[in-house]
Image 1 (cartoon, rainbow over the protein chains, first blue to last red):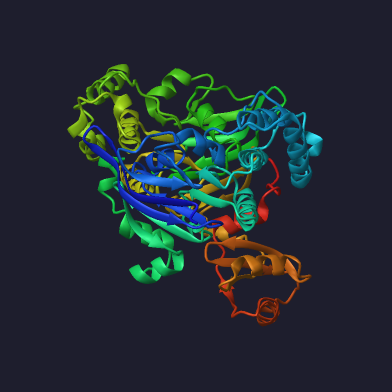
Image 2: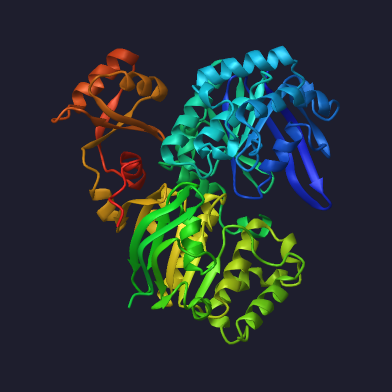
Length: 246
Length: 307
């Protein structure tokens, strides 16, 4: 069974079609790069996959659940992390994990056991009572990612998880993604770093609400006759459309 | 006199050292790039130059004027585009531009030439509320407003953060044109590849410069032969090289790995043989030219001495 399966998924805002007939299958354990220019419809599609926004037409089955029929049930089976919002800065590491665990319906014992296991694995045990605001950005992001996985979701959505971090931390973060996907968790990730598109199993490129390209980076480069993902992106997400629709 | 002169600048917030002694100059009509991750001190430095923040120690001058003593005079000489959207969301596009022109005591028409190309792209939406603009259009309006009084120095704080590669390229093309107009630009960015669009850059981390110079000078400071490794099983190759005694450094770089050898005489053929045996797959190892990101990673945590 696919982790995400959408059929002609469409969302309109007034007479503007943000997502236009998106049909997509993402396999379990896949690292799927969800690419596109600003305003191409990525965020709207992700919000529908997460049960936060109802489709205008079409359907999406995420982790076995129909997002239009049971939006709340979807939320318990997925994890979400974005660069802009992740952890509460004025709570400690442990408090943040307890908060996320609670929101996702874990009981006290589960929260305690899973937090301890996670902090041991990340080597953060000594910092469990540290406020998030005094941690380096790279640590915060690793922790935010782990918090999004605390309730053992089948799919995790990462919205520009590596924006603004230094190049070494950025690479360490991708290793975490690899390790996570190897355990069978499906990862859907957005990024503006084109080298990161190469680390994905497959990528799609959205343009004006439609999926214009789909495949592994190797396949797509071959198909479009380009030697890197930057060039591919330029060719598909042509300039001109970007500013009027962004 | 240089348009921007900075000497031993330090800024502390309580116990946090945001800037720990940076010095540099920017030549007239050039683009200086400040490249580094979030929290490196880029915004503190730009806000000091924009006279919005006082330095704790050291000096900074814009067009020969001191950022602390002559702050009022400096504000007429500079344009400043902060990282976050800075315009009035309830005013229309046109009203924002007129407001900025009035605040600077100029007529929007007088300097229309400089902003014409940028503003013409958003002019069809001139009656729209600024808050209702898309990200790309907001950015163009902010840039138009920062240029309306024809500043000699333009300070841009992360204008391309969170922006897709196509829009990033368009913005850099615009900045290149402003440089041709003789404007001096200081631009901060977390994207290492944008160094190529600058005349000179400083790589900044934890309040200090790791390197400063032209992009080609900086790349030359990479002190080891660099190799790229190509194979279908890149992750496997990464793990195999990490546990190999002859590995000095190994990092994923898109579809290849970048590798340096710990031996004084590197042995790329030996690397390929080792990986072929470990992975049972085809492996190519060839010499590569280091880029700015390679340099940044190599010298992270090893700043040049504070000056």
